[in-house]
Image (cartoon, rainbow, N blue to C red; front, top):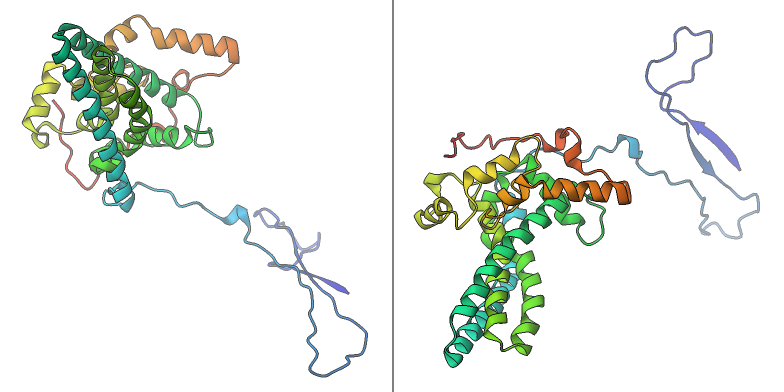
Amino acid sequence: MSILPQHKYPLRSLTDGPTCPRPCRIARLTCSATTTKPRSSQNQLVIEPRLVTTPDPVTTIPSTGTPLPNEPSLESTWPHRGWVASGCTTLVISLAKAMMGAADSHVWLEPMLAGYVGYIVADLLSGVYHWGVDNYGDASTPVFGSQIEGFQGHHRWPWIITRRQFANNLYALARNVTITVLPIDILCNDPVAQGFVSICAGCIMFSQQFHAWSHGTKSKLPPLVVALQDAGVLVSRSQHSAHHKPPYNSNYCIVSGVCNEFLDKNKVFEALEMVIFFKLGVRPRSWSEPGAEWTEETDETQPQVTVH
């Protein structure tokens, strides 16, 4: 057996002058083995084991760069549409049961109040979730890793959400709504409970679309959406734009934004961050200066328009 060192660059002795400024590369070895036994036949196959080398991971550069506005990953697929359809179906059943139950009992006020509470709770839950994925975890976090990575990328390329097709944007939430609400539809007939569930789950499911509209320009949004934003029913463009400005620690709620003032004024999330830090020793990202991954890159394919 012979071991022959192979070098990409010739070796230099200590007396050859200044050494090369480039980092030294580890010499790669190629091993070959031959047998000294005589061959029994001229046609016999002789296998020579050889060390198989793999590409140097140090020289492998991952592909990075600004996402293209027409990437296939932004398009809706039929599975996406299927989940959105199933989510909408479960919501319609829940709302129908609430209305039919209210009509049978001649009690409308309680289901309507329950629906309003569900609307407020949905906004609050969207803020808590948004705060969590913005400040904790990374792409390797179990269960939530892909969503954390998506929200982190959203801070760098916020305009991408306006290019994402409807079902592509909502299918993940629609899938969760289907799994959660369908058993309630089957087992529960209380109109008050169904009033709460239908509105709360519906706002959560469509929160990503409300979020996308908050990044749109007024001239390109449907007039009804603009009217609802201006009335405070949906999160407004000006309110959510504050979330994308340093220090990136306010206005987390993305359904209506009605909870943002209370949460920010009373420093609720800051208090939760202190509790987590003293209990677990984990610092939120909002305590540090935003890195390059949160430096916003604008859409160079479109003229920049000021959002009013």
